[in-house]
Image (cartoon, rainbow, N blue to C red; front, side, top):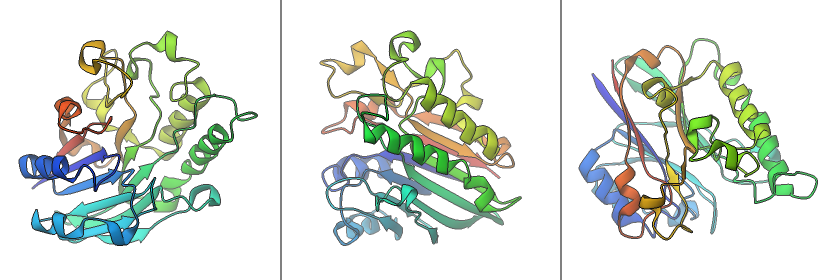
Length: 267
């Protein structure tokens, strides 16, 4: 049986519902995880998703910024919305679902961006980001031994050398500093996660999922970063048949600065 999962930092789901509908109509993933929905739970466009066949929804929203949502064609059950760092931000949502006889837990994350200055002594946003990553190190242990799990989302860190357009020039830029990349690598290693994108496209191939709005011609400049991720527990990794980064979506009408990432599994 096939199963398709997508993740996308949409940067306001209400503003960009037309391109979300375009994406869902064309690609028909079984589950779509959205980050930075920028709306309260009651403001989420439920009816628009139902009309597209996504009748099962889990939403953890916040007025004006942050917020995550997971929409699905088949039943999903909310497991948890964790308040990382205890500041009240809506940045995590996990659901449980069943597919092909497997019970799978799916984590949807929006990790703090961390501000502009990579020094927690003068930039509290950067300290918040580092503390958030430290708490993430316990995720697999919390899921329990042997549970099939998937973790997706905008993690706001490009951990590997070829996850950015210039490793040397970005070493002191938030999202690629050594303290951030080492922290995320520790989350992967200690949690036993499989980085599915890199398993399909090993280094030194460049992989990007984000291109800044500041670039006059993002496509020609191609100064991207891999900030969006799909990981799984080791038992699921062999079932991944394809990973697709939908680069073209960065050029759609009123685009997010992130593009969808799609994982296809066969069980």
